[in-house]
Image (cartoon, rainbow, N blue to C red; front, side, top):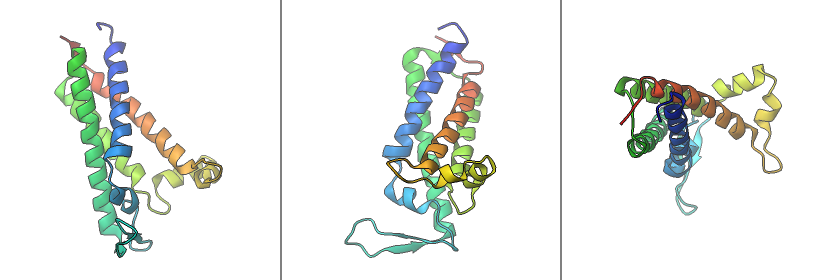
Length: 168
């Protein structure tokens, strides 16, 4: 693993695995549902069908999204850190921290799905508004565009994390 592209490829794969686990297994149902809540468009949440729903606005949406992004980024850090150790890759601490900060910030920007938010606006301005709203035939356009956003930023984060990487 002496070629510069090898640590990048490893970090990208490990980070992608960590992000998928963080987004789909680690994220709580509460965070998934409440992270886009606003006072103008509150979210009603009940943990089980027997529970009385609680109403959540902007403050709860911000907290839920921040908590999700924290656990998401921690899951990425764990996957990349353990994987790099097993593979004999030493990541520069500053580069790794910068990559994780970028991952957290861009994940928050996308996942705080308020009406007219970042991804919806980007989809509309790039002619993908209809795809953003698509929710037929097992396809969810918003989810697909969200994933594309995350994959792109994760690639940039992996490039940053692999900067100054060495092998043992």
